[in-house]
Image (spheres, protein in one colour):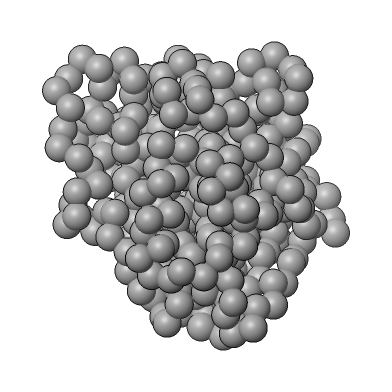
Length: 347
Ligand SMILES: [Zn+2]
C-alpha cells in the first residue's frame, strides 16, 4: 500500500462495516467538546483514527472522523484560529467558536500541510475572511505533496477527494501570508507567537505559543494517545524541535491529536523519537539492512516498550496499519539514515 493511503485504506474498510455512532457526539471522550484553557483560550479535541482508541477499535467511521484538534485564542479585538480541519467540519467548528465569542476570526494558522489541518482553509476563509498564515516551508511542502493544486500531476488532495465529497467540493486554498522562523501577532489583549524552529513532523511545522499564559499548541509535532504518522517526518530533527519547545517551559501543551496535557507530553514524545532513531541507527551501524531489521521488528518494539516514557507512543502490534505502524516508522528512520538530504536550512 502506498502512502496515499491511510485514507484509502480507511474508506475501503469503513464501507464494509456498519457505521458507528457519531464520534463527535458530546461526551464521547471529550471529543467535540470545547475546553477553556485560560480566559479566551480554547481547545477542541478532534477524533481521528490516529488515536489509540481508534486504532484499536478498528477503522469503521474513520473517514467521517478524520480530523485534528483545534484551538482558538481571543487576542482582544479578534480571534486567531489554529488549524482548519476538514471542509465538512468547517460549519461545526465555526459554530463552536461562535459559542465562545462573537469577535471576528481574523487569523487562521495552519500548523502543517496535512489535509486534516488545511483542507478546510477555503470554507473558513470564505465564511470569516480570516487571513491564512503558515511558515514558508509549509507552502514548500504543499508544492511537494499537493502537486495538483499547483498545476502538476494529481497529489494527495485528489486521492482524498475520491473518498470524501466535502474535499472533492473544496479545492485547496494555500496560506496567504507566510513567515520564516517566528511571527509575533500583537493583539490588544494578548500576544501570540508562531514558531517554526526546525523540521519535525513535516518540514513546515508551526507551534503556536502564548508566552503569558504559557500555553503551547504543537500541531502534530506531538500526539497524545494517538500514534505518530511519520511519512513526511524528519526523524532526526523532530526531537530537536521538541526540545526547543521544552525550553519554553509551557504549562499546558495542546497536541495535534489527543487530549491536552503538561510539558511531559513534549518530553515523552521526544524520548520516543530519540529512542526509535537510536534503535534503528544501532542496527544499521551493525550492518543490518532494512529487511533484516523488519524481520526482527518485535525485538525492536520490545526495546522501545522497555522505556516507560517511550512506550506510550509505541504502536501495539495488533493495531498496526500499513502506513501507521512501527514498521513504517522504522522504514522512515532507516531511509533518512541513508539520506544526505536531512539538514534544514539555517535561518
Ligand atoms: Zn499531520
